Image (tube, rainbow, N blue to C red; front, side, top):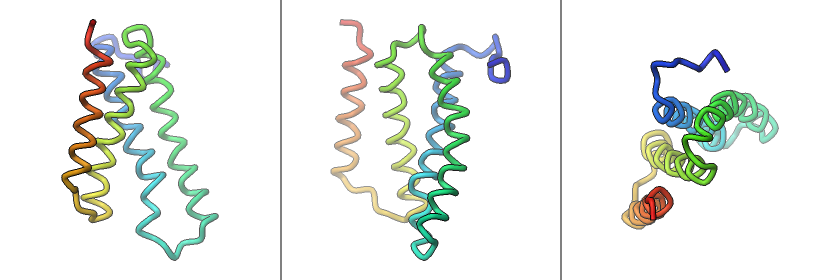
Length: 121
């Protein structure tokens, strides 16, 4: 834990930063192999597991540091919003897929759900 702990970094910045980095690794692990359809399934599974290891090395500390400042539901919401944000960029920039209006609308609805979760009612 000391590896990541820096008292000068506020908990929300540390938590969100680690979650963002972990989502980059997981997106690459889950979808990076799609550009290599001729690679064997077993090879891409093993490579993906190797990449996902680093995702866990970031995700677990992020949740440990953030829990207490954020609720578990808030942590999961942050993770999902970051995951979709990273995936949208990845699919456009790496996979070359178009960003359709309905994807953007769906994402906006999820951001609206995040507002509901984080708003103090």
